[in-house]
Length: 306
Image (cartoon, rainbow, N blue to C red):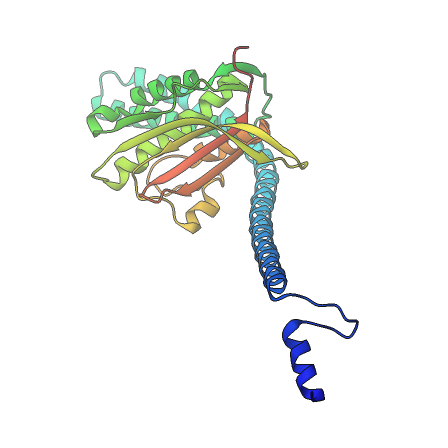
């Protein structure tokens, strides 16, 4: 038997230099196990990369929220000073205009002019009130309140102000049968929801959307906190069927006095951000895949049944 023939048989049978022999079946099992382990490692690696991407996105959003909160706080201090300086002379103008209106009872044209001054003063006073609301320190008096109660109160108030029945706005309520309890300042969160709902309705009406449907939802989401660790938050969601929000608008929509409409102070969403931030929550704005914008208020959750 030649030396080459022996070497060939050893290679086929798996006999090594030490005399160990690996059967063909065992070799196949080893290769299969190796392939399985490799596939698992690749899957785990991909899952880890996806988790890293998610955490980076959450960190980016958290940092943006913190920076926005700092910026709004600084602007609030400046706005409060200006508002206080404006309010006193504005009150005097309004007082003198009302006196003038009374004294011009027998002169309709001049009385009409005085009335216009009074109306303008009221408009400016509303702006000053919004500025002071935005600028004031948010003192949160926490109570446990049902999310559905906050939602229904906000819907009722906006329905009176905007008269959306005439505008053809309909409301869908999702998952409100499941009771979600908020641990929050009921008055402040009510004000935030009113501003969000009003903004959604005005977005649909102002853009001339043919389909005007408001979708309200309440749920629970587990998120990573600013100090690390995960916690459950209540989520109040408002979706409209308007034109949605562009990336540019989304980056500026919480800035004071920024608005895409011809009327309004542009403080509504800035106040929403301050209220939610005072609760240690978050505001999330995104476009829905089927069209329209979605605004989510993430707020501390209370225990059901308390």
